[in-house]
Every structure is written in structure tokens, then in C-alpha cells.
Image (cartoon, rainbow, N blue to C red; front, side, top):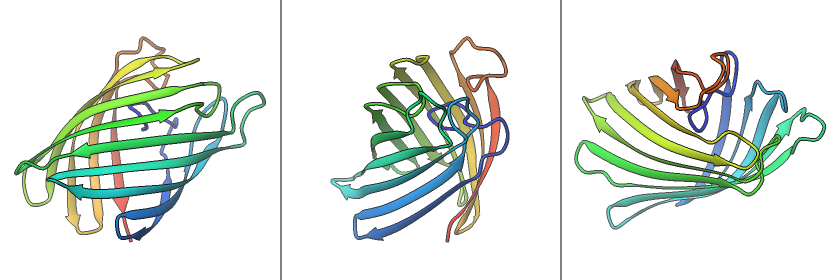
Length: 188
């Protein structure tokens, strides 16, 4: 799932590496994508994470490249993102924005803004929900929302079960339809 919609017809494998230097980091990722314009995506990124005045800020810039891009579609894209969050006890509200001047595929300029919050239910369980709006040149505009639970039974392993939906009136086989997604994250 990305920006509230599915990126694959089946399971997605996303591999990400990162090197951190104080507040700054360099990273890269690769993932499979089911699309008429590409078979996957790789990206290199640079970012910053900073805690200041009780707020958690993050920002990054990524150069994305489509794997096996279809003729006539954009194979390269710049994507800039930023977010701010504030912990208030067990509750953490968050605002984020993702912008691209010319996205991958046949879509032009895009912007996705999302507001959400998480709430710590117990030592290893967190509930969260978010709603976002995406505007795209040459693509469908939509509102997306999600809600779910994350469980971290071990320090470096997290399982997330989440409901996703959008307001897009699309064929039920399209990436905009409602779905329940289970995800696992293992970090080293």
C-alpha cells in the first residue's frame, strides 16, 4: 500500500536499507509493483529526522526509478516528503505531505496530504488511523483512509493489520477498493 492504494495484485516485498549519521540518513529501497507502466521500483533517498521543541520532524527527498518502464511513461521521478508529530502521553497526532513534480508512469504532478494519530494500547500494541487526500495531474484524485493495530512482540519485529479504503468509484479489481492488509516488518 502506498498513499492509500494497493501497489500490487498480491504480496509486496519491500527491502530498505539505511545509514544514519546523527539526524541525517542515506537510504535506498526496492519493491515489486503491479502496474501497466512498470514492474517494480527502486529509489535512493536522503533525509533528516529531528526532535525539536517537543515535536518530531522528518523530511526526505527520493529519486525513484521504475523497473521495466513502459514506452511513453516516466521512468524517473523526484519525490519530496515531510512530516511532523507530537507525542502527548499515549496519543501521537501526525501530519505528513508527499509531493512530486512529475511522478512515475503517466501521472504528472502529485501531492498527498495525510493527517492521523496513533494511541498506545499496551506495552506492544498500538492502534492508529489516518485520512489523506491525493491530487494528481493525469490521474484520479481521491481521499483515502485506514485504521489498524500494530503488535511488536519483539524489539525488531512488528506485525500490522489494517483496513484501507478510498472514495474512488472504481472497478472492484482496481487498487482503490477496500481491503484488509497484514504486514510484517523485520529490522536489523
